[in-house]
Length: 118
Image (tube, rainbow, N blue to C red; front, side):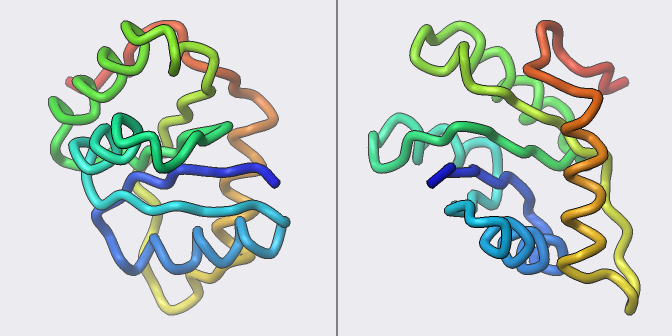
């Protein structure tokens, strides 16, 4: 079973993402902030095969997460996908999240450079 670490502070996004990934047979794990994600990783409680990080207003924390993961040999092979802020409206559902993630996975692999946050 693939473990996917989801990093987003938005609860309206988290629940559909977790549901969509679970429906695909993945084990979703949630962190509300990049710092929480790092704490989970350093605790050794999880070993994700992929990390999905929603870009939000706190670009410096996201950048710090990217730098830390790329400097640590344990996490260098783990794909880190940055998702643009996902929409929030009444039509937002697990299927919409799954489609958004699958679309990004088609053209993206592990980032080799930090995202342009500014």
